[in-house]
Amino acid sequence: MGLVRAPEERFEDLPGYDYETNYVDVGEETSPGNQNANRSGDVGGPEMAYVDVEGDGDETILCLHGEPTWSYLYRKMIPELSSVGRVVVPDLIGFGRSDKWTDQDAYTYGAMYDTVERFVEELDLRDVTLVCQDWGGLLGLPVAANNPDRFARLVPMNTGLMDGTQSMPEVWHDFKDMAANDPNFDIGQLVDGGCLSDVSDEVVEAYRAPFPDEDHMAGARILPSRVPTEPDMDGGQIMAEAKETFSDWEKPVFVLFSDSDPITHGSRDYLRDLFPTADEQPDIWIEGGAHFLQEDRGEAIAEEIVAFVERT
Image (cartoon, rainbow, N blue to C red; front, top):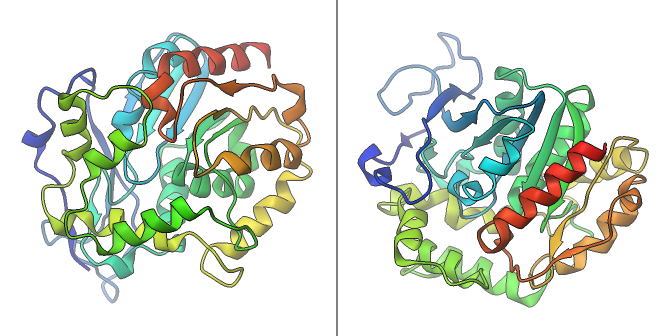
């Protein structure tokens, strides 16, 4: 299975994102009879890139992005979040500086879930406050449900637990078809269109940086089609089980959605009802934010999360 990684020079001089990049292998352990070649032809991989900011407190905050962005999406939030502790921000496999499978078939829900769970295990993250949006929630929330001893708090943002029983809005179906079929699929333009704020040309280029050609876009194109829309799809069962776990979840949960996201708006009240502790937190919407609320209102969101951490 082929792997590629975007050239490092594509990430030079990114506005507002001057952080050291770290890598960790999140592939399955290999044996002489089960060897998969990585980028350089060696055994192992894929490797997940991540930013790791030490911070000033004792907390550990894990920020997971979604489709089709990368850790750059959290750049406005890292400085404020680091006031309470370590901030870890990975690029999902297929995105950002992380390795990318070139074959769309490799991007199953199960494979993506496994890489996130291994990332948490390899870094031995504990007492984690999970901040997750879009696919970051589809993956991160079930990882938390299945590893409860590692997670202290949850902050779901513009996401959901899609087990195949939900209906998806028409705008999502349009996006899924565009990602799969549009020969001019422009990720920078897509992120710009998913924001209410004015996104500068330099920032739009930063969102394009991980995707120099079609080999790098396999994950971005196929992941929308991997959202379970039927219960028997890959991932449907694990999210249904996560819902059951979360119905008895006693740890703090702060459901924090933006007010202008046509894709996930309908999931917000359901999540607040699902988690028993969610109604203990402020019932607010982030005003002036669309789907990529971190880009629109990152500083304000980070302040809300820090306040949540401090009061719990």
